[in-house]
Image (cartoon, rainbow, N blue to C red; front, side):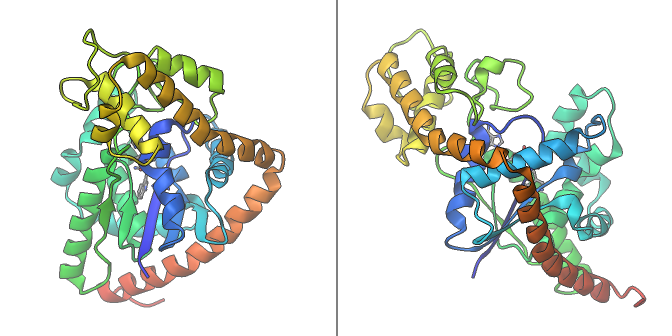
Length: 326
Ligand code: TYM
C-alpha cells in the first residue's frame, strides 16, 4: 500500500489555503493509503515564540485536524516533538545537504528578509522536513504548491544518502491538487493566502463565521473588467475565486468560469460553497474543543505508532552508515 506523509505547522489559524491545498487531500488519502500526518511543532520554533505558545497551538491544531476529518483509526496523527527520531534524523540530513542547496531555498530567502532574528534553524529547516518525510518510507507527500521545492530537496537528499551508504530511504514524490494548490490572498491576489498576511480581510479562517466569510469574499479584489475567465496571470483576483469555487465543488476551473458572466453571482456562489464546506468542520471543532484531554490522548496513541516506524528507519540508517553499534 502507498505510504503517505505530510505535515503542518502549529502557527496562526488554519486557513482556506491549508484546507484546499492540503487537508482535504489528507482526509481523502486516509482511505486509499497508509497515511501519516504530523503537527510539526519543532518547525514552528524556527521563528522565536513566547513560552507555552507552541504547545497551546499544537493542541488546537490537533483538534482542528480531527474536526477536518482526520480519523486516528484510519491514519497516524502525531506531534513531531513526541518522536525524538525526527531531530536525530535531521542531523543526518544536514550532513547530506549542502550549504549552497539550502541557500537557494526560496522560503528561506522570503522568511529571512522579514525576520528580525534569523535562526540557524530557519536555514536548516528543509533538513528537518526531509527527516520528517524520509523516516516513514514515504511514497507520496500531499502538499500545496508552495512546498514543491521542499519535496524536491528531500528527493535530492534521499538519493544522495542512498548513493553514499546504500539503499536506505524511499525517494518520495509530491502530490499537488489540480485545483486549490495555491489559494491567493483575497485582498492581494498576487500573494498566497497565508497565516502571516498583512490583511486579515484577505485570509479566510477555517473557523470564520459564515457572515464573515461572506463579507470577505464579497469584498475580494477583482478587476475593472466584467468578464469571468480563468486566467491567473491576467486576472488573478477573479481566477482565485474561480479556483476556490472549483476546488470546493470538485470541478474544473475553466468549466466553473464558463458558468458565469458577472462577478456578483460568482462571489455569492463561492461564499456559499465555502460556508457549506466548512460548516461540518466548525461543528465538530466546537465538540472537540470541550474535551482537550481526548485530543491529547489520541495524539499520544499516534506518537506510539509513529515511533515504531521511525525507530526502524533510524536503525537502518545508522547501520548503513556504519556507526559503531551501542
Ligand atoms: P504549512 O504549515 O505552511 O502549510 C500546511 C499545508 O498547507 C498548504 N498551504 C497552501 N495550499 C494552498 N494555498 C495556500 N495559500 C496555502 N498555504 C499553505 C501547504 O502547501 C502545506 O501543504 N514546511 C511545511 C510543513 C512541513 C511538512 C513536512 C510538509 C514540515 N514537514 C513534511 C510536508 C511534509 C509548512 O510549513 O506547511
